[in-house]
Amino acid sequence: MIHVGAYQKLLPQAIINMDADVNYTIITLNTGQKIMVSVTLKKIEAKFVAHKNFVRVNKSTILNTDYACLKENTYILPDNRIVKFSRRKWKKFQTNAQHLLN
Image (cartoon, rainbow, N blue to C red; front, side):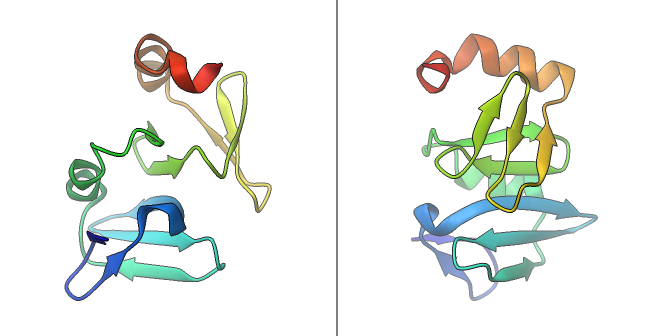
């Protein structure tokens, strides 16, 4: 369980993606539930460093690669939302995450 907010602890495998909204983060769970926490995406990202299946794809999104399908430089989420990598994050992803590309 990872502490993500004031009183929120979540299992990493239950999280589909996390989206930034100014100083808040909206966490989408595999049950379809959305949770808003008053923690920035940068602080949450630091807590998920040990979990290699979580990838920061751009300035406002972290996603769980177990739930997303990679097509070129974009991920397609279960709700058919398309999340595109930023240029710098894509280059970093290509060099550091060969295990996810295979």
